[in-house]
Image 1 (cartoon, rainbow, N blue to C red):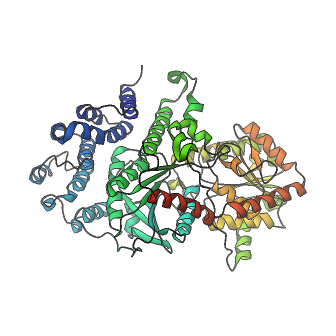
Image 2 (tube, rainbow, N blue to C red):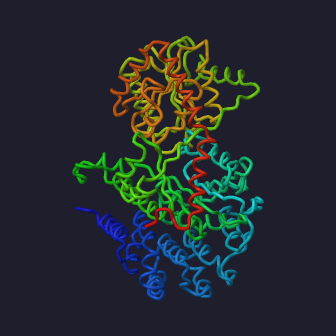
Image 3 (cartoon, rainbow, N blue to C red):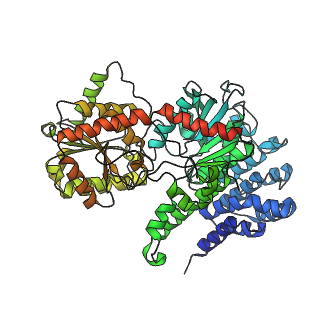
Length: 623
């Protein structure tokens, strides 16, 4: 039998898609369910209910539930709904009389109340002073709620061009390959720098999240990255289990923080660009609406493609993992809401342009006079060798081929062909599938494998990393002789990755090196472009956007990564090629990147989209 929470969630989502009427009492009944996805859906339906039924009815229903709520987390969510709607459901003196009692004195509800009272002149009746607590997150929140300055404004140019905000709420920009950090951070770091020097753009702010414990060690919320480009941190509560994309309560807090920190820049943003379909992006989108900024969303065929492929034609109750299905459906919902909210939706270039995207978002077919959404190409930053580049290259090679290393390659195998893959350890990246293909096919007897990615600290691993690392360890245990030909290298900075790729591409003391992307799919593949730029022949998944720029046997090789067997067959084909063919493919791959995929070309393309949107008299595609 279908779970009642699932039924309620599906019913609310259907009403939103049909723009139907949902009574505030029905939404509040749903909000009382302790389910993050259902609460996220309620938060999306809440503004429409307020418009249709008026503040009087909504306030009455909300006060009733707030006064009888006994659970701190639920109370926090109800207060956040009031904050979102800008409803003063109780007088400050009433809040003050309740503040010392349970559940309002428990952390989630207490922090939600502080956010709620931030705009009230009598807030001092409830809010402590920031110096009254040693908790870093609470001190920052109280400072912001009291109207205090969280950072010195960066001195932005005044309206010669656009102030662009781009969000990067998953992982860290400066540690790609670790946890959830990946190519997006590398892209936005370089793109922000390049946009800031592009005509029509005054400055770029990249929004990131930072755990308050990190802010205790390095308290600056605003940090310069390059001329005209800053990162701006949204503090996250280390005591809250929800992350940026996992729950509506976290999303409400992120909306509040995004509004506060962006307002502290001294200039309102003209445009906000989000790129991932989750609650974190919905939170930033809501902050953009409150600030009056245009919203751009980069849509991708996933998660719609993923759910149609994994679940279409199946008996869901018997064959599909219910929790996995719920996750997929929630991301579909978030993507649909972001498409509906955005002033401009752009795509990621694929084999057929944006044709596949329109299949899942047919409402986008009419954009740009029937041409469909634009798909500005992404790009990579030009690599600048260090003064001691040759020494750095040799150190990296020595690290890989170290007779005494705990997870390195036996120097005696250095002349064998080398397969290199770089990226965060995640089941979708399929490093474990690559290892299985390498082992089961016997390729480990005549090649070596370097896997770069993952945390260097066991305690720093997230569940996805742990799953992949455990799978690789189990595979190697069945082939102990392969251990000396496999190097598992924790994530290293992007500059070191690119240095290592160049070292392998031109080394005269090691075998021919190939870059392999074994992912189930890649929407674009920044790491693939970087390997091509380094001069490595690349073999990458044929699923997603990589075939947009890689032509099989012309400037790279396309792999069927749907199973370890098909992946092994592709690798066998790769290693059987004549050296002259490999060299020619690698050369053409490098030329492709340098001709078409520079970060400056990408910045010019994105700036054209931004300036056209900002200059238009009305939203580009909002229905």
